[in-house]
Length: 283
Image (cartoon, rainbow, N blue to C red):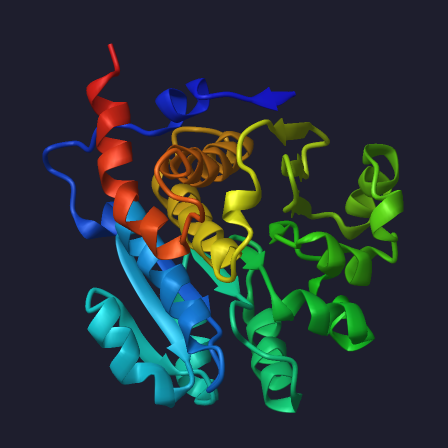
């Protein structure tokens, strides 16, 4: 089914007057090695601007100054501190792992700690290099085998690594078989993104385009996705996922009328105003 603008009206709701930050969820984002700190910082910024109540970033300590200069609202822990990381995981509603994580042995250790400590009542969004690490390590696959609340957000090459399906063979029937075997939602990022929900529903995005083909675009999506999931609990999980994916491309498409390339950071700047506009247009 095609996702339309109506999904934003359905999911985004006006906040109650007596709300506090605890009402809008705890998001933990894990990633950002010494070379790719920007990825986790952009994901965290997107989560904050989309309205997540409390955002914590577990990353390399070298990223601390940059993180706090860009997203002072976010809390920090060193992702090599296993005690702090485990504690942070235990208190999160949604855990994002992968943006800028890298694929070396230390990244694998961080991912092992993360996947080993995710509980059945938490949702885990697996993105970027975490997908590659899982595709290459049977021990990591075993850690997610029984988890009922996993969302993978691969681009087509990452999906090829994880699923074994060549890009030119990635059609719905074949993708659905692999997604079902993974027992996870798969958001396949491509021209007209397709979402294979854990519920068995397949939804398609008809907006977006080549103006979004730039580094960091997927990191923004993971942050928006985490914030929607933890904050708009009156809607079903499928609806929250669809709304997040739609909002991300909707803002990018609007920006493309003025700019040749839509930058991820440009999307972040428009999230709050776009969500407010949705609220103002509700009957």
